[in-house]
Image 1 (cartoon, one colour):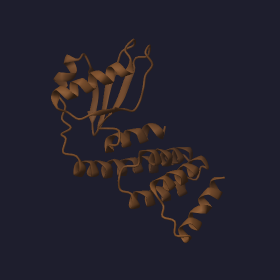
Image 2 (spheres, rainbow, N blue to C red):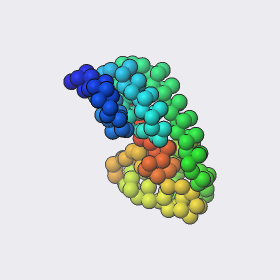
Image 3 (tube, one colour):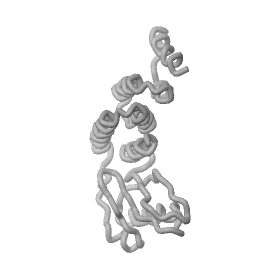
Length: 185
């Protein structure tokens, strides 16, 4: 059915219907499920040209379609390109510094494993809820005047491991980028 859905796009264009982000998202998702990675990549390119703001979910669909086709090099290249583009957009749109005080994290008993390019990874011990860790991180950032964080992964209460967060609010560049990586796996 993905081919039928994709076939409607030229008909829509000839009828003068303007494509919105939702139209592109639906078409890219149809291509992902139809294992048509070339079409999903082409549509994503058009989406990026027409709507420059970050589009994490469609990117995740394209990455997943590439993964299914074993086009790993292309998927990694696309992720790198989008990260650069999104971070450039973020620098233009945001004046909030991304420097965080590791001392504030240590005071909260948090072990930061990684803080790099909009990604924050914190060690979560068994018996502590994901929500509790996120609130402690948010509290630490508020004290140091830092940015918000968005949870992009969850761990069950009895599970220990790495809890990944994006540095930025839900619609930020870093959140969209990290969410796209999780959607593409």
